[in-house]
Length: 274
Image (tube, rainbow, N blue to C red):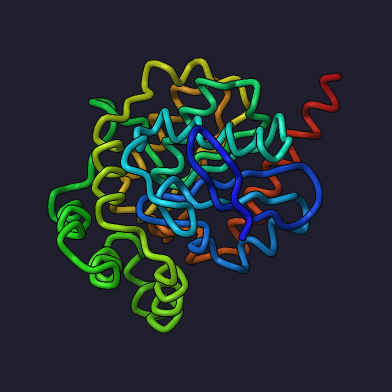
C-alpha cells in the first residue's frame, strides 16, 4: 500500500500512465477509489495520473485535525514533494476544486494547468444550492456511509442518468465504500467548506484554467463556475449540457477527453509562445 509522508501526516496514493503529470483531487467524503475506472484509464493514455486519498479518507490514516482546505493544499504539495514532482497539471472536483484553488493561489509554481470541475469560490460570492438540496448532505452526518451515499444520489446525479443507470450507481457506491470516510472526517470537511473563501485570491491564479460543470448540477449551481471563470484571467468556461454534479461519473470517457484536449491545447499554446 503506497503511503507518502506529507504535511505531518501520511497520504495514500496511486500513479498510473505515462506522460505529463496530472494530479487529481477528490471531493467531499470521497477517496481516490471514487474516480471512475474508465475516466482514469482514458486519462492515463496521455498522462501520468496521480490520485490520492484526501487526509483522513480511504487508506490515508485518520487525523484529529488539519482539515482546513488551505492545509489540505499543503497535503497536496507535500505529496508531490515526496514523489519528487515539481510542477504538475491539477484537477479538482467539488471540494477538491476548492483545495486546487488553494494550491494554485498559494503555490502557483507547482501548477502547470488547472481544471476546476463542479466547484465554487466559497464565501459570500458563492451561489449556494437551496436548502432542499443541501439538507441531503447535512443529514448525512447522522447516517451510515451507505445511507449517506443513497441520500445524496438525487442531488449529485442528474435525474435522467440516475433513472437509467441505477445498477451502475450502486456499483460505484460499493467501490467508494470499501474504505468509507469516517463521520467525524466528513463533519470536519463540511466545516472546512463553510470556512473556505478564495474569491479575492483567484486573480493570482497564473495557470491556464478550464472551469467546467454540469449544466444540470443542482448541488453546486453552474453560476459558481461562471464566477470562477470571471475571476481567473483567461479562464475557459465549459457548461456540460444535461449532466449533473457528478458529470465525470455520468460520462467518464467524454470528460477525460475534454480534460485531455484542454491540457494538450495549453501545451501547444505554450510551445508556440516560446
